[in-house]
Image 1 (cartoon, each protein chain N blue to C red):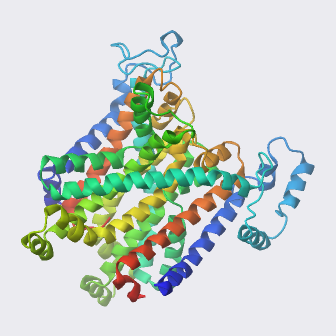
Image 2 (cartoon, one colour):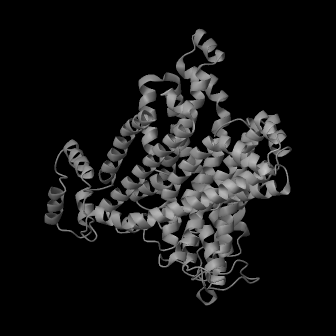
Image 3 (tube, each protein chain N blue to C red):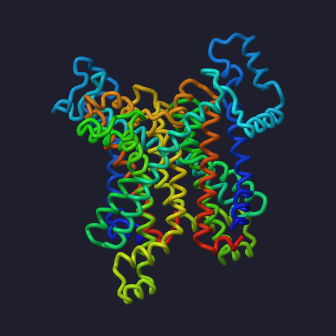
Length: 307
Length: 277
């Protein structure tokens, strides 16, 4: 098991390197002179020169990259050119709210998605199945900002149950988490349903029924564990997508996390912060994918022995 | 082909609904300007912020512009950006996928490394990063959507090509002395067309969603443009007092995305239900 974990981490290294190269190249891909862009509009030639030198932009690209990587490894991601605070400080502040939102979102997605998928599969070809399947199709087609508008209008404006935005109070997280989770819930429901339909026709399920187990026990103890492997993969993948889904949800609900930090930074052309958030999101996504694979190998020994 | 159409239209209720919705949206994109009662940009300040009436079926926005007219015009932009963005990523994606799948070895390893790195940016993040580099605007959104879709097509086409390359018909073509280009274009490509069609339909839905999201964040279509995401972004400030402003553009967006998703699902069921796309 430990060997598999090591193997999986090692095999992600080239991807991580590629991601850092992309993020590093970011300012060099910008149209125009990066030093001038960093110095801001209306900067004098002297101050542009100063910025160029202080950021090392006058050194060869390769040297710049090795300096950048050394910085990243030490947690130095540069300095915001909007308020001269270290990017790492911005990231640290915004990380927790986004983590809370993402975890709450995936909790909603798993609860709703697994339940809906299990119910739909076991009510195959009944009106319940049709309603849940249609609901899931609608769920994957619903942009989060449209859903956010509906939820805000119904639960915040009309019923006054939750605040329209902000991150104060325990209830403030409910609407953003539901908004974030619905798309993932729909995807999880679809895969759970189709995997479960594949399993329920198996002989061992018929045997479990024949032994006289309660129908619910057959579903939860015999059928569900055998659907978990593909379902886990989808949950892991969706968890990764929620990381970037938070960008829009945080903007609508004024949630002070990484997504809002990114959108604000783009508005202010604060390139070091943009680079920092993009790098952090990509690394999180890679980490979640590794965790999913490891979990997957833990559930199914056949995978870890394949090497 | 006939059987595919029959299976899509006759036997699959969801697929049929998808075809209907997509056809309707295409008609609106083509004839929307003729149906629209007002111009999409013409302000009418005395009529600002009107709730829906017979004169303005969808109400009016902050500038007194007719929301129904703006929504009808928006179909053109969303479909245009959706199709253009998908094509822009699809063509190089298919080329890279075919090459990587057929030649394996070094080229394959390199292409898949690039794809892995691109797919390490989850969901909409790569598109946002591209627009942050290129600047806001519809043209850059199309480019961002193309780049964002490229790894998806490449991976699927590579997988299908890898599978096809081991088949007897490819071996036979090779034995006949056919050149790689001819094998790829005339033998492999027609045989892997099914997954390409399905993924394209699903990706159009994704592209329209991405485009609307970017415009909603202020990174896509600039303000007066009648683009659904941009209209919704304008409606956000008035959500408490004038929620009707969001109804038509929101509904149009959801229905369009739903249509392409249903079409993609229906096509998959009609072409090959076991397809993993």
